[in-house]
Every structure is written in structure tokens, then in C-alpha cells.
Image 1 (tube, rainbow, N blue to C red):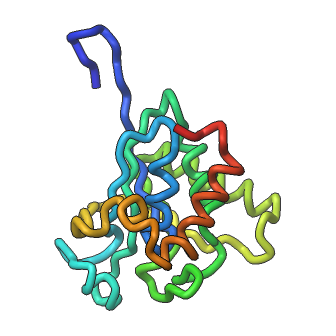
Image 2 (image 1 turned 60 degrees about the vertical axis):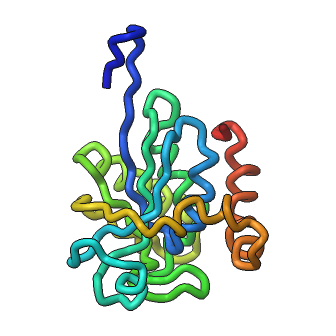
Image 3 (image 1 turned 180 degrees about the horizontal axis):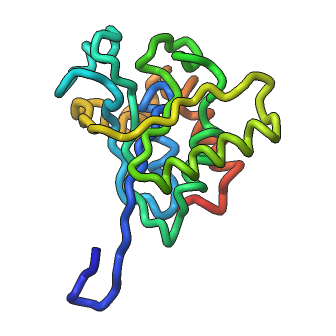
Length: 186
């Protein structure tokens, strides 16, 4: 998208990722250089405008996702995927930790053929490197629609950092990201 007032061009792209609880991955990606927006929501299901209750029940078929708006000249899609695979367990089918159900599946919802190719390459590389003892089960699926989650889910960690779930589950993921990817910090 060009900004004609100052002759600078700002590119943005969108990544839609499901890594279990959206609060966890949202908290990490809010810290990534080149990321301008992170929204928690739902994707990959059959129902239009699902509620959190419908998603959690499993009846909608959606996964909890984050939608990341980023500048690919600052941080690449591949770098985002590497961070994504580092901060969740891509080897557990329909679960992350104590969260169980298809809504907690690991998935990359690609927006175009290039994103699909990068996702498949990153997964193949990690599988070849045997980073995890079990195979990666992350779904790579075409993006269809993003439904933004209710307002109280947005920036959850930032707004509730003192809550026990945030301290026990989310804070270690953020710390892991900060340690492993200091060069990507805002």
C-alpha cells in the first residue's frame, strides 16, 4: 500500500496461525519487530460469526487463531513461522498442554501459494532436523475467513499479566521467545 504524501511505501501482509490458546501466541507476536497488529479470533470452521462458547464446545469447527499484520521488509513470513513453531508444541494433535479439542489444534492458514510453500518448507526442515521426538501434526490449510474474538480476548496477557494462567502458562512462552529471538524484539 503506497502512501503518496511522503513517497514511502509500507507493505503489509497477514499471517493467520493457530497454536493452541490464542492468548499465548498473541502475547508473543505482540513483541515481534515488524508486527503492527495482532488480533485473537477464530478460523477454519463451518459456522459464521462464532462465539467463544461455540468455538470452545467444538461445535463450530474453528480453531483459536491469531491474525498477524506485519511488514515483510522488516520480518519475513518464514521468521514468523519459526517463532510460531518455537512457542507451541506442533506435535500434539488437537491439544496444547491441558487445553484439549480441535479448537486448540496447530494450524497455518495460508493466504496465498507463497505462504503455503513457505509453511511446507519450514515444516519439512523442522521434521528433517528432528527438533521434536514426535512428528509435526500442524495442519496447513487455505485461509477462508477470520472472525475476531470478543473484546476481552484481545491483548489478554498485556491486560491480565498478574492472573495465574498468564504467569504459569503465557509468561514462560514470552520469556522463551525473548531469549531465543532477541534480534526480533520490538
